[in-house]
Structures are given as C-alpha cells and as structure tokens.
View 1: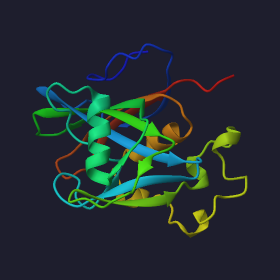
View 2 (view 1 turned 30 degrees about the horizontal axis):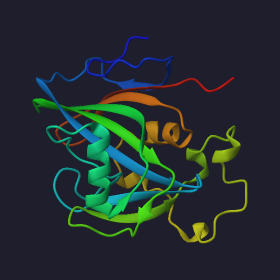
View 3 (view 1 turned 90 degrees about the vertical axis):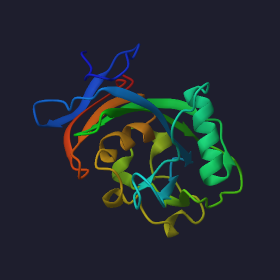
View 4 (view 1 turned 45 degrees about the vertical axis):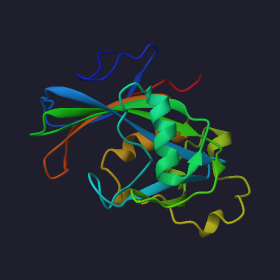
Length: 209
C-alpha cells in the first residue's frame, strides 16, 4: 500500500481506515520530530492534558513535545510525560502521525505512545493541565471484549466526562479508536493556517481474523 508523502515505512500489513479532503497534499521543506503519549487504564479511561500555552493552546491532547538532539523518540516521550504530568509509564509505540500546515515550512512527524499503567502523582505543569476522561463506547471496538464498557465499570468512571472531541484536533476522531483498539496505525493530516483540516489519510494493522 502506498503511504502519503512523509509517512515512514511501516513493516507490516495495513488497511485503509479513512481518507478525504482536497486532491493535493501540502508541500513542506523539512520535518521536525515530536512525540505524543497517552495513559489508558482498564480500557475505560484515558489521561489527557489541556494545553495551556503555545501551539495548540486550549485543546486537549496527549502529553509530548519535541525530540531533543541525542534522544530517541521513546526517551523523549518518557521525559515529556514526566515534565508535563509528573508521572512515569512503560510506554510503547502504537502509531505514527504526520502533519503539515499550509504556509509552514516544517512538517511534524509524531511518534505516538501508550501505556496501560503508571507510577507517580499526576500533577499540573506550566504546560498542561491533566484530567481523566471516560472513553465513550463509540470510540471502542465492540468486537474486542477487553476494550468494551459491557463489564462492571471501574469505581468512579461514571463521574468522569467523556473525551471532548469537540475541543481536540480535528484528526483525532480518526485514529483514537485505532489506538484504543490496540491496532498499530499510521496517518497524515494537512491543515490550513487557521487549523482547518484540508486532507487526511489513515491506515491501521488489520483486525485479527
């Protein structure tokens, strides 16, 4: 399967899960490496952070940032999670995203990580305000027994607000369900200067037969 320009080669089978938008991809001159990390507990709740300043201010997202010189993406993801939320977690890569913005020279390659446990005390930082959200049923695959809300909910889960997709990046609705289903995913989304999504494509590892 041919991947959109900029996406790293993925050594495994992929099926297309979503695509749309205009005909041409946004051009870019260079690529910056970033990370994004999520903590998901019991397949019923996810820790998100409200961006308090800078790019993406006012939006909910995972925890992450730029990969510094000499760091691996995993090292950067662990560091950013601790800096922004005060916790450590056994992160594993679960996907790769590529973003380009019309009129911006640099595109963003984002390695996405997840963990299903953590240690430490969740703490607000200058950059992010962490909060737990319940994973609404339509973001979970009904065919995966370990990732449904059919069973008795964890204590306190009913009091949590659902994931605020309306206050997140527009592409999140396409790949969050893949992450919650524990399917490795790749995707690209292009945005206009005012953060409107222009073109997108997402793929993921096939569902087990």
